[in-house]
Length: 240
Image (cartoon, rainbow, N blue to C red; front, side, top):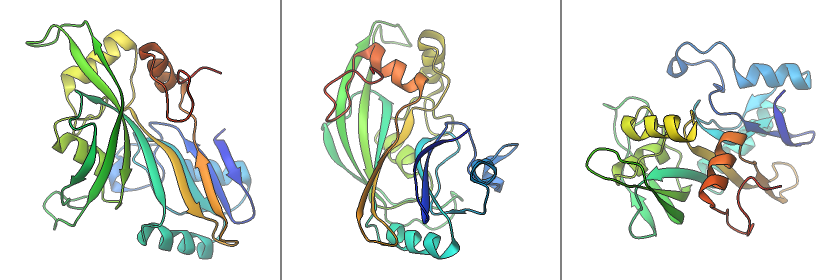
């Protein structure tokens, strides 16, 4: 069963699990299960995607109950009035601790034309773990809050890799040695990118909406182990 964060007659917000493809496409390869199909069975009706998340990414995903509502929400995303906040664990400590990555990106085809793309980031917490890897006896990692202005293909993943702080668990744009380290020492087998909060206007009433998705056990357990807290909570992530 999918974790439904919010629902009414217009829309549904679900907490997408990491590793579950949203819908059928050439980009998801050999996926056999799709979120959109599971949700249709769960709620008993036709639903429409308002936006998308990568297969490896978890977190808030908006689903419309009609094509008209999907179009209205889509206009908000296209107009950049939706505020999207993601949590990412990255290799190294980004410097400065807050900034904007302004780097044009192509679409799903790397050879396609590049379009403007900006991602704001803020370093929330850091850690240095005493594990030898390569030339270094210790490894540095950081928890980053990322807010993309645009919605380019794999934007956050590509932007953080561009500044040499790739997301842990990212097989396409990350570092294989650090991904293996997390599997071996921290039993973490997922990409550490989570769509944490989404702010938008309700498509019918116009009321401001804030939908937040809790971290799954693997992500929350890692943050608890590192004694990292999330903004505004004042506690270790994962504590209940």
